[in-house]
Length: 130
Image 1 (cartoon, rainbow, N blue to C red):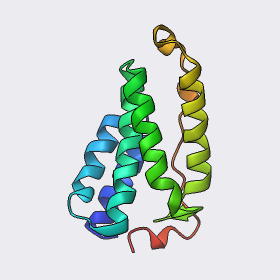
Image 2: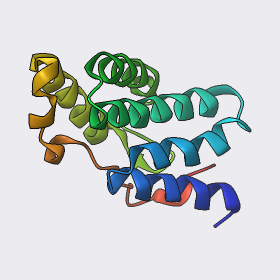
Image 3: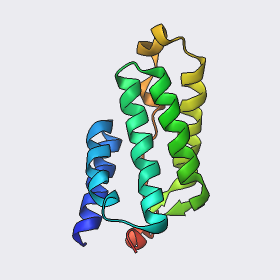
Image 4: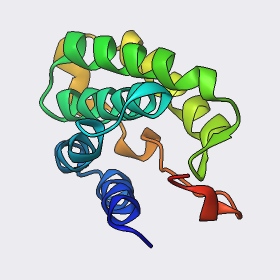
């Protein structure tokens, strides 16, 4: 496993532990170095992580804006990309967006963190950063 893949997987571990700010920070280290389609993909993941971080902070508008923007950037990558089961992940993100939209900002503490997605790797995740 190369250094970029280690960083990528560390970000996934943070995200799955609901440490969204940390995931965002770790992935930025890769994003700064990437170009082309991978850069856009990482930007989308970073925005999704930042969106959930805003949810944790009670910022409904920021959460919805970043989740939607991140979703739109990642969605074109298909059912899986870089070893991530994207279809399942994005279905969960879309569900979170709909639930968050239904909340009054004062009700944000009622958001069930069990609704946040986890990032699952494909069985052939050896393709991760290739």
